[in-house]
Length: 209
Image (cartoon, rainbow, N blue to C red; front, side, top):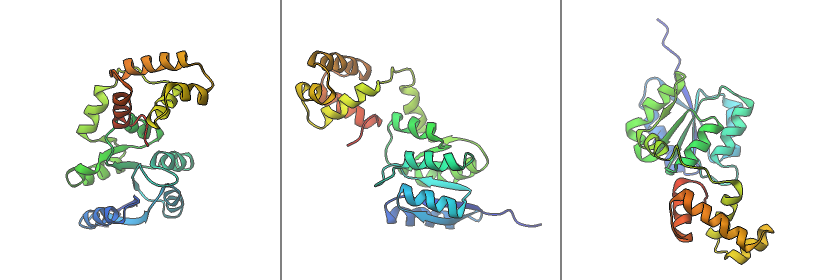
């Protein structure tokens, strides 16, 4: 019998050691092969066009075009592209953003050894795979009210150290409006002050610095 073709995997990560580690894991599998590597989103798109891999492993935080943007770009050209996010960031909002962009899997790098091979096989077979820890975190916030785009913009300015008066000037709104938005933000994030709001927003992937 003719052997099944191996699953061709494209690895996208800006850390060479990470790519080497994943390659070592994949090369130990009889049904997988590393098709290529890329170090940022733009390279990922070009590599996908050239290599047409079966599964792409995508980091999120990369210089230039980030992982979510790369997923969107690849899926716009190849709607059936199978992409697994591989990241250190466990924010539920960031995970949902990646899944909405078209990722079929979401894995934390901390669970690499346990789940990577199974996830690649699942996604290659047409199934979705989200790590148990990530699924639990998403479920924890699934009924939370989402922040509006204006609220996220204000949070970013708060994170940059701006006071209410500066935020009001930069967004061309009144200080009272800023205060009202902050009150809404605190309620949605279940926090009581600006510092805690920024901390929670960063942890969940609502904003990044």
